[in-house]
Image (cartoon, rainbow over all chains, first blue to last red; front, side, top):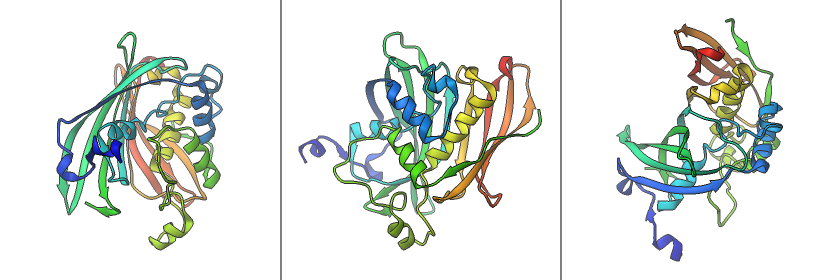
Length: 144
Length: 133
């Protein structure tokens, strides 16, 4: 509960265009690459032997970024994605991900937001991937 | 370039569980029980089976492009897609790609994922740097 009090409720009134989320830092793990490859039935040696991260392995960083700022409002329909790939992400690499709400829209009684986020090598600042999700925000199981 | 088609991918409960093990989300105080994880919740919402998270279909598509065009897709490539129909546990998916534009420096693809009924569940575009296309 104390943790929740430091963060804002994830609801349309609190999600604004321009809001920055993160950064978060993590080390890319070979174990996660292996597990992700299994979860997508991939046997591509780039992933399984060279331990290069599959392209969308860190797509869910949006959820970690949201959790740095918000609580609650769980659920959502992630209807659209885009990714721009700039350099491979590799096991052992320490990376930094940060994001920004780039668009909000109420349409036909639903609240949509786009979160754009990018991941860079934490040491060199090299851009690795820039990506975005468009989501419908759900609050307490109902479409906001 | 003719149409590229992936091997079939069975997206069942085991595949969904394996995928969940490969992603990192925020810690949860209680296990998720919703239309993505629970048969009863899915049926209560009017679906015939749990709906697979769209990100898994998107991930299989992205991997398919790497399988088809190699590592350099991760050096200047782009993928954009919309999830247009639900994927139910037990569905078998195939990924498809077809060139729609040959630019000087890049290849533009139409991409889509089909279920076993031939219905498109994901539609989008991808860009592949020309030096590898």
